[in-house]
Image (cartoon, rainbow, N blue to C red):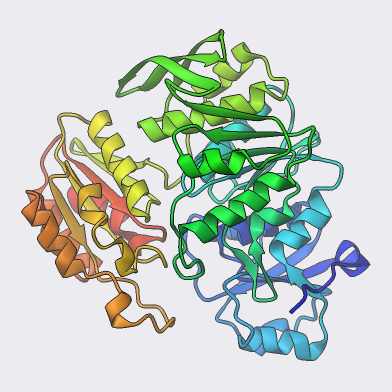
Amino acid sequence: MTTPQVSLDLHAARRIHIMGVCGSAMGTFAGMLVERGVEVRGSDAACYPPMSDQLAALGIEVMLGYQAENLDWNPDFVVVGNVIRRTNPEAVSMRERGLPHTSFPKAFSELLLQDSHPIVVTGTHGKTTTTSLTAWLMTAGEHDPGMMVGGIPLNFGCSFLLGSGKFFVIEGDEYDTAYFDKVPKFVHYKPVTGIITNIEFDHADIYPDVDAIETEFTKFAELIPSDGKLIYWAGCERATRVAQRASCPVESYGVGTGDWQATNISMNESGTRFQLRHKHKTLGWFTSPLHGNFNLQNAIAALAATISNGMDASTAAGGLQKFKGVKKRQEIKGVVSGITVIDDFAHHPTAVKCVVSAMLERFPNARLWCCFEVESNTSRRRIFQDAYPPAFRGAHCVLFCKPLAKADNLPEEERLSLSEVVAQLETQGTQAQVIPEVDDIVRWLVPQLQKGDVVLGISGRHFYGLHDKILAAIRS
């Protein structure tokens, strides 16, 4: 099936409907359209913070549930998210009404990337933080960039910038685009500077194996023009192999290795201090407020992208020191009675391992209590069964709520078994249990807590208000 052609209908549209508007990228695009003076409404199956807060602040009406009547306001154009199936009643009605429509990445590229220099950040992990930091460094350097990111950078308070400068910093997802446009989103983003943070198996619902994912990243590398640049993590064999297929100059980065590298590293509760080298030249000392080795890698990638595009190293260093982070990325939700409650987005076992390790480094004397929601298409699958227990190594206790139920007909034998994960955790010496309801987790957990403890709640969603409930229960 071919992609519907974006036409002058899109450029002239003053009323645009977005299906799947509460997704991180879709909600971001909705905000950009509002800033351009377009009336935007949308629909989704559910809506939760932080995107629900952003949409409300923008005055965007969200219709919960997909149905034909959602289109009765007669939009000029419809942007269709990748969560929408061809048989979705709203999509069926859209086609029956003859409404012009396209995918979000196609619409975004057509409306906002003309005559710009896109810096596209890709990879299995670290995209949101690296994109946010790159945009912030560009802002600190007075480049006034555009930005589209799947999170809320705290320096900006929203997930998008239109900007007046030539650079547009974009989080490039390898997930597919729409039911009628089955290519990764990043294919549409016209990269001039590209970043690949890593390549690992993910999105098991649409990719059969990691080789298929590597193929898509190869296509991304081949998109970059000869006068552009590809920056990739030297520690990833697949990213290194992909970089060899690019026709543009390529540079690697890493901790103690690569063309761009951090050396003389020291970490403490305040963050990370290091020297940055580019090939044989030392660019100076840098201090990052972010924690964990993986966030150091994210910082090096962002510094490489900005400095190689003309930013002064000392200006970049000043910007890095003032970076505030991203919501739901090691976000401290509150500290009550000496107990720290932290929210994080991780769902892939590698990401879980990274954030747990970062918390152990940041709070070396604390007992770390981890609460995890199995909710993403990745975390719900048995293929990662043996990867989760070691990801939590070092935690004092790990608690799981019931897995999120989805209408995707995933066979029982392909689903992650939490009872097996708990057994494996206990075998490695980590206390663990499944407590299906979040309210019961709070009731069980809070009496166990003591001053100095850290509670890390990990979920790609709202986690049923777990963090706020824990803080409220400690106060009471």
